[in-house]
Image (cartoon, rainbow, N blue to C red; front, side):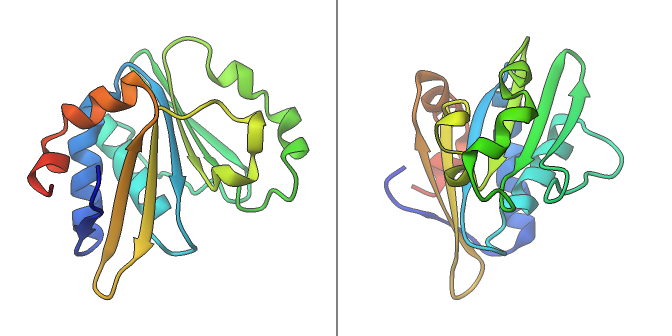
Length: 157
């Protein structure tokens, strides 16, 4: 996606997450970049809800990872904001998170370095004068297919 997508408010962020959700049922990895308060957790929560996660969706800021299961899909939401060094991730068992069909959402992936699974899709959220700007960059064939199949990305282009 060449031009960032303008998202007017939290409802627009949630709407985009809901539009992308059907493409993710086979699993993959999404890296979420952006400053504090840019909407990474809002996007992740909306995506989890759209995938069928029910109940309270906790931010993994302190636990580092929160895991969910919807049908046969394991979903892992990581927030690495509090990580000072990628070596701290060794005990998380990141390799095991990828066993079977799994979707991995990683906030602040730049803090995890090479210890993290490679992304299929990189999303960058940024503050805008009104709302947020979202840039999407596919990094794999899977990520490209996700964007190609999500009409919300085409209607804004």
